[in-house]
Amino acid sequence: MGRTGHGWEGVVLKLFRGKDFTFTVTGAEQVTEHYRRVRLTDGGLLAAAGVHPTMWVRLWFDDGGKPHQRAYTLVDPDPGTGTFGLEFALHDGPASDWARSCAPGDTVEATLQGTGFTAPEPAPGRLLLVGDAASLPAVNSLLEAFPGTPATLWFETVHDDAEELPLRLAPGLHEVRRVPRADAGAALVARVRQELPGLLAGTADPYVWIACDTVTTRTLAGYVRKELALPKERVHALGYWRPAREGAVQHATG
Image (cartoon, rainbow, N blue to C red; front, side):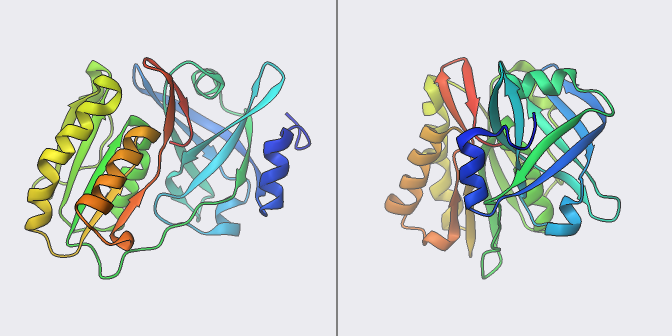
């Protein structure tokens, strides 16, 4: 797909000063049946933009002759070598189809626009994270951005192989509470509502970070900000995907 083929979304991103790059695949591995990692060279991205936690880019795919864009978090970005990885929670759709079939030498166009991260001040006394396979790379990025900081992660799962996903947990420091997806995310909401207040009560300077499907994220963000009255600078919430119907997803970012 040429750079003029991004449609109206590409025009909007360009108006917001999005910068275009071309990535080249160097390898790929199947982490689990439903999760795939692709390694790429960055086409000058990291030298131009630097690196920050949870950094993401928009990738462009062909969808029956129409442009299709989805956002993904960079994994292990290395400005020295100009390389990074992308991890895909596989489902039906052009992005996952590309991830399944790409081979060394293949290229994909990308736009850098909208990404950013502001570290909370004071530094977190504990990270309280809510995520799933789509936001797993961002979760890992946050854990690594605050080394030595205790963390509790509520991690929503869909497949039986979820325990094989590459969460970068430090034993004795990071705790994961897996929650099977049920009732369109309501089970995750109920679990967090039950357990989060107790953890907040014993934590100085907590930082709550929520990134799952848009409806669940919005519900939990409202709960934390309104009912638990956490200051807005201590809460970050971003919906990472939208359910087209239960069992089929449309990713917003990952």
